[in-house]
Image 1 (cartoon, rainbow, N blue to C red):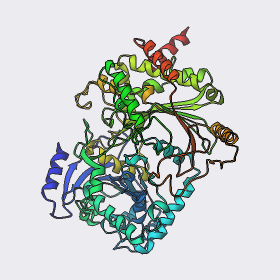
Image 2: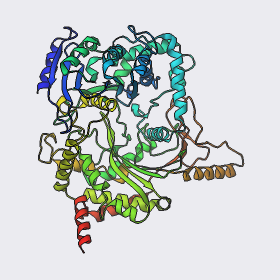
Image 3: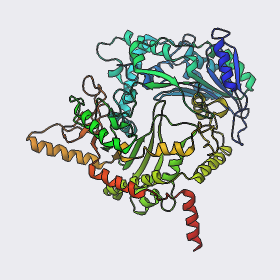
Image 4: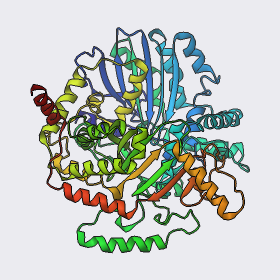
Length: 636
């Protein structure tokens, strides 16, 4: 299309005028109430894409730059380097060397700035009063052209990173995330310690110069124009905003990165992004040497035929025997593989009860087709006969949600979350029975075309009448969206569900096929189930006491607040440590979270499989059917 042709033109002149731009798109699909004007352009010299937004009524302006690189790209032995790099960019540039220069300009002019480092993306953003956009954007652009990386600030910022981690230790969100990482494939970067601390960035024996060299290498490899997408919103015209972006020198950012080292090449590679419709297909995606949810067992991939099941089971048993004996005594792990078909009990800091079921899907979910939305509709609706209605009616749950959990270059997952009542926790087995029964109904039921049409129609209505969001949030999302979507779809792509007759949106696969592929993964053997509750700490204390009584000696209790600054065992810093309580009790090393982990009991699996067989041929109630039934009852 037009954007692809422009990209070819940009690639044809890599060393031309750094200010030269190629027009990608003048019209974006936007809500009816949106009075903003849009234009997408691309620098010919380095391939950086820019979305310009003119809002003549806005008193605020802002910008965001997204780079497709994150904590998953931390070099080996430098956990937290991407996060550390994010911090260092705010501490001065060649043109504006003062460490507080940027904030010092924004604050008196009604502005602010922030950034985040995610798994595979990093995003920098700011807002400021409209009249001061030129000065702010010039300072912002220097982050990516000529950061100073002052060696005198290295250790000070390492200590700031360390302090940030210490503040995160009592936060359950961070704690639960790291527990989840303990069960991922150890050869995938997802199991790492993304925020980092002083022990990972500046351990004994590592000089400031060595850390600084790693920082500069990281910047030179990854912070290049083709990986960047920029959004600038101001009150000026699109023509003036275009000139401003050129004048501030974004075209001078390097167009290619440094050659990676041999270990980095072996750790990951890049392949084409696979998607249909309005999602971009020209951007590289990360492909790692091992899938984050790969177990390392032969049965990790569903057998092609039922006759293969017994052979795969034998293969699993042999692989389990060959697993690393030096690690924790979790026999179902194989060569550092991920764990699935597992139940975790997690002790939180705050008082809440949450049941979650995460189901890894096959690779990345197509962002255009969004098959998970169909599953979310069936599992999350609240009509008669729904899972929500059943749990609420029994007094076992306060809230239920279902939807996409991970959306990464090489992986995705579907998650069901249930906020339990005290009574619900007491009946946990029955809650899980209901969940797996409803999942079996979803898998057995034929595709309901009306649900797809309804989801499409509702997404169209919500998008068309959506109100404009604030400047900072808008530019942050738009810059990230420009990486994933063609320019015309930056606003609409994430929001709209395609019509089932739109073959292009489904990449020439039928909606039924895509939904069936996703639904087939919603089985107990593929589930990672977690119960987070204060009661878990009491169970752990009881297990500790039992262990003490058996040994006849007091062992130190592994407190939920006990964290190690250096992680777990030497050589395996991210691997959970065994609690003195034994019997499957573990301690996540970075935050000190106590949890219990065990494979599903065979009796439970048999019961859930039987429910699945009984569900064959039954129909699953949809939201529309629930509404119709409710109306009929009302008339009666």
